[in-house]
Length: 188
Image (cartoon, rainbow, N blue to C red; front, side, top):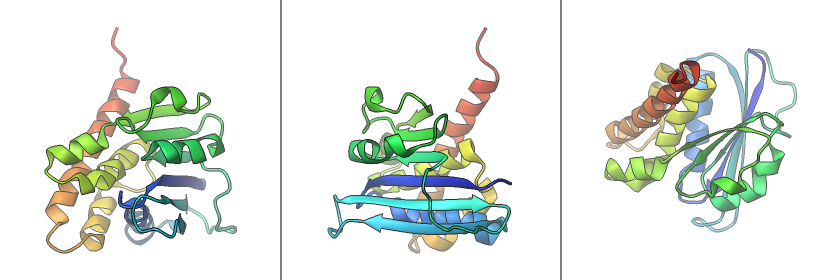
């Protein structure tokens, strides 16, 4: 596997760092890949800019910092404005479609949106929108296998919330898998 760089960005309180940790742990611990992770957040706990960067590779990683991501996941309009132009040309842009204005997205990219907040609210907890996005990322990127991500979720989320977080993951995974199927089999 060639190295892939992914940045997940949003604002504090959306679970950006946890989403990165779950993907990183799934790829490294459960799938046996090499992973680096760095994180950045403002001094405020909630509402400030926040991002996590991962490099996932089948080979040892010689430089641990992400300079230009192959994949960008944006969970807020501010994150899109701040990081959208950094994505490689023809990179993969995944976004929370109810929080980001589609006309503001980088036109040089492949773009897929998901109503992650709406899905999380349907499950009864808006806070699990990050796990909806983790499922979506898993379906569309192959950075980690679905089973590895399920294990990482069980190991990473607060005790007693495993089933809710797994349900959110499954919702995002199914939505992403449906997009992949639709892309492979367009309507006549």
